Length: 128
Image 1 (cartoon, helix red, strand yellow):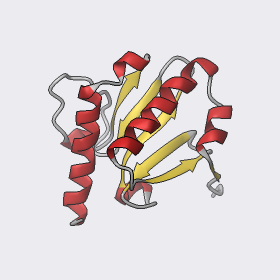
Image 2 (cartoon, helix red, strand yellow):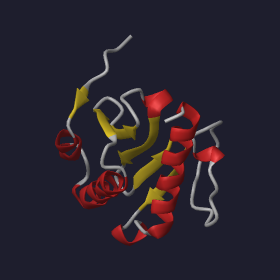
Image 3 (cartoon, helix red, strand yellow):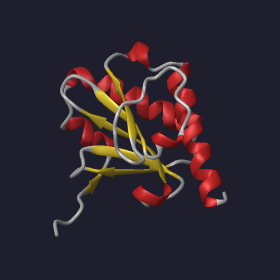
């Protein structure tokens, strides 16, 4: 089994397309603004920054930022359980969903509402 490579968000940005860096940084800033006490874990092998109530990605995580060449996925670990009134989330997994963010303008109140719902879901599920 391969060892997980941890790093910093700055290291993640070094491997991100220059045009996508501002979007990834703005998504991270959104999470840190909404949940200043979030636990950030950057897994360089996953090419993603994950955010949660603690470091355990699957149990405590609620969101992730995963840059691609032409967009950045803003993922919600249990997005399938959350309301999505604007129909922005994509994915067919049992739990995870993501929003493909292609511009800074897409980081809006609707995306913040999804994040807040994801945080509330994890807090309720873990009794915190």
